[in-house]
Structures are given as C-alpha cells and as structure tokens.
Length: 346
Length: 276
Image (cartoon, rainbow over all chains, first blue to last red):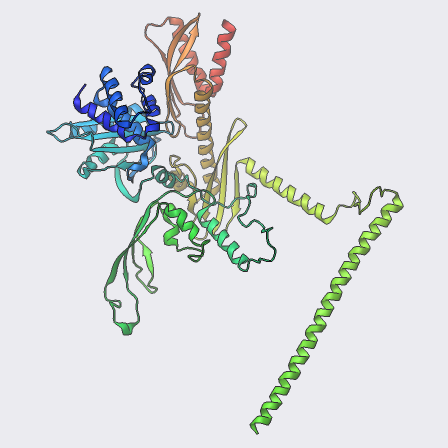
C-alpha cells in the first residue's frame, strides 16, 4: 500500500471522534467485521489509527477507497466546512430525467479533459443527493488529497452546494463540469454561505417553516402565554403588547425551527443624513460602511429579539427577508427618486 | 379685579365638576340596575325551566336540566363550529383549498395516492396588480415556473389544476418507489436508482422460476410528469437465460406499464406462490 495512502487514512481516522470510529468504519465497509473485531476501540486514537492502517495494509487499500472514507466523514460532519450555494440556469423546457450514470460519466469526462491529475469520487444518498469529492493536482503533480473540494447536488434541481476550501482557481473548471453533467447552460454563485449544509438546503428547497394561512384545522397548539395560575396578585401589564409581538413574530418566522446561518452582512452605500448645520458628509457622497450580524444561530436570535424586548416588532424586512430571498449578503443603495430611502439590490 | 374674576371661574369649574360627577353617578347606577335586571331575568328563566320540568315530572336530580327539544345557545354554537370545521375538512380533502389573505389568496394543494393522503404544499399568491407567487412550499424540482408562465395570468383554475396534477403524480410515483424499497427490499438486488422527481427508476430484481432465481433488470421512464405510470419500460434478463424467461420479461414490461409498481410486485409474489 502506498505510504501516502496509509498516512491519509491515518489522518482521516484521527479526525473522527473516538466513539464514532467503529460505526464509520462499518459504514465504509472496506474492512470486514472480523477485522474490526481485532481492534480495541477504547485505546487512545493514535493507536486506533495505527491498527486501522495496519488492517488496510492487509487489504491493500488504494486512494479511491481511502477517499470514500473521507466522503463518509464529511457527510456525517458537514458543518466543519463552509458551503456556498450556486444556481444553474437553463432555457429549455424539456423534462429532465437525470440518469445518475450519465451524470457521473459526463462530469468525469469534462473534468479530466481539462485536468488529468484529479481524484474524483461519487457517493449517492437516500435523499437523492450526490456527493462528489475532488482532490486537485496540477498538470505536473499528482492530486493533493488534502486539497479537496466537495460538491453536493440533488438531481433535477438548479442548486449546487460547493465547499471549496483552497485552490479557488479550480472553481471555474468545476462549475463547467457541473453544468455540462447536469444539462444546464450556466451557473452563478449566490450570495448565500453557511457552515450548516442542511440549513442551506432548507432555504433554497423551501423546506423551512413558512407560516401559510390556511383553513386546514390544525390542532391548536398550546400558546406560550399559559395562564399564570400562580400568584393572582401579579398582573401582566403589557399582556396585549406581548401577545401582539408573539403573533407578529409567528407570522414572520413561522412555527418551526429556523435554518442555521452564522451571519448576515450588509454593505451600505447610502448617503449619510445629518443636520445640515453639522456639515458632516451631508448628501455629498455615499457613506460606505459594512454591517455584519454574527451569531451561532442568527435567525433564531433574530426571532427572539422582539419577545425579549430588545427590538420592536415587526423587525426590519432587511433582516426577515433572509430565508425568502435566500441570501445573507446584501448591498444597500440609495433609492433614486422623490423619497430617498434604501433599497436592496437584487 | 383679577382675583374676583379668578374666583368666579373657579366657582364655575367647581359647579361643572359637581354636575359631571352627578351625571356619572347616575349613569353608573343605571348600569348597575340594568345588570341586576339581567341577572334577575336569567334567574327567572332558570326557575321557570325548573318548574316546567317539575310539572312534566322529568326532574330526577338537582339542578337545571335543559329540554332536549330546545338546545341551549351554547350547543347551537358548538354545532355550528363543528359543521364549519367539517366543511373545511371536506374542502381540504378535495385536494385544493384556499383562504383569502390581506394581499391575495393562499392555496393549499394536498396530494393523495390510492386513498392515502400524502404531503400538502402551499402557494401564497398576490392578486392586487397582476397575479404573482409571493411564497410557496412546492419542491424545487417541480416545474412551477413553467406552469406559472403558461397559465397563472390567464387561467388560475387551470394553473392550480395542472400544478395539482404534477404534485399528485409526483407523490404517487414517490409512494410507489418507497413501497418498492420498503416492502420488497428482499427482491431487489443492490440499490434502487431513482431521482428527485422519481421519473426514472432503474433496479435489478429476482424472479424465481422452477425453483431457480434469475436476475432481471428494469428501467422505468415516466415521460409524462402528470402521470404516475411509466411511459417507457425496458425489462431485460441475462443473455444466457432460457427463452421462457424472455417471454416473462416482456410480460413484466407490459405489467409495469399498466399497474402500480408495488402492486405489480405483489402479483409476482402471489403468482410464484401459486406455482410452487
């Protein structure tokens, strides 16, 4: 077995949390159950990885098989990478049939015709998602297994999720191969980025909770305003306002959990408005500034702003439009015309 | 002088205040009395009802027993709510229901296949100027934009009908594929290759004949997105298989075109049982 492959497998195993190593190796399926029985998974990870490499040596693992283990790891822990969303366009109206074998063939052929030194692996999952792992080389060097890009594509959708890590120069090539393989015409990057791959999918596939008004008799959920059967001497002075805030919040954010985004960034190119006497950049040139909201879970924190009393309800549409507009990068320019305000560029 | 004037104004204000207080007190008293009248009327009605029942000899226990022929206001209201809910449920069960909103209308398309209700999808339409889709929960692989471009502005009924056909057919195809993977996983060799729209299925399955099993490969193409049956079916067996098997492959191919996938597999199982 190649020394580089052995080292790669060893490092991949070291990334996995100790309690998960056995299950992941089972999912991998490269080592037999009897072989796995011989490994003590309670020892320190350093030793576990050595044992695993030893077993892989017995089975003569090659880089393709090692790459599959890497895909499995990234599929279970996708949040360790930053994902961007790309949107593809096509003009035709023919029904798409999406033959997986055809897709894989076209992708490999297109990519390899431009760059021979690449390792390409595919893995399909139950939710119609195809995971593609690409390790990049150069025309003169072998693929570097530590410089990988990941692509997640759901058949018959115009969206592709790409995690590039390094070597952004290979991005155009990757995009081209995707467009050709999926029978689209062009591709562009959306202004949507996050660590949470599933949340990005929820946003563009419209799987997040939207509050639609229907007559469908859903069972009435327990309101948060449970009657305070406690001390009757305590009166809620702002009960009406609290209920209004709850209602408005529910209309805007829906009932379910919000997609997980880490930040929203607003680039302002608007005029600074001040008292004319102060003579501070007044209407002379745009006041350029960048506003960035960061949070472990931005949308949930926005949802809790009004109930916590930290902001007025309803919140600014610039904040609440994030899932619907499927973007978390905005450019705000001056609205031309009678009423200077701000408008969001598409 | 000024003081005298001020005194006079003060006196006037005082008088006005006193008068206002009087009128307020009068009103309060009136309201209290009216409420008392209501109370007494209610009591009188209850007692009357009691007396009536006593006279009819139906009073078995304490308290007011309402006459079943004259339902109380509360019972009527409950019945009204129940029947409205039932009506709404009926509309929902027809598959397309809607609710007017401030800026337009919100539609709910529910899908079903063979008597099983499946997912529901929503469309929030704006109707003020031209008809626009504000938000929706239709899966991204359904050609919503195409259908909207054709029908939304001109014939909204047709738009909903075509969209409903697409969604129901998709739900039906997915249901069949899920059934195949779930109930007949022991007959499928390897993985069932499918896609988001479930309009192309490729799989290998086992057929037993004369106590031997043979692998068949099936490729089902659903060319019509509004249909839950395939338009093209290719069933093939290995080249060295006996001739009778080729006939069987052709028969299966025909069956898949006419009958739901899981039902076809049901019939295979029962056919084999009857032969053995």
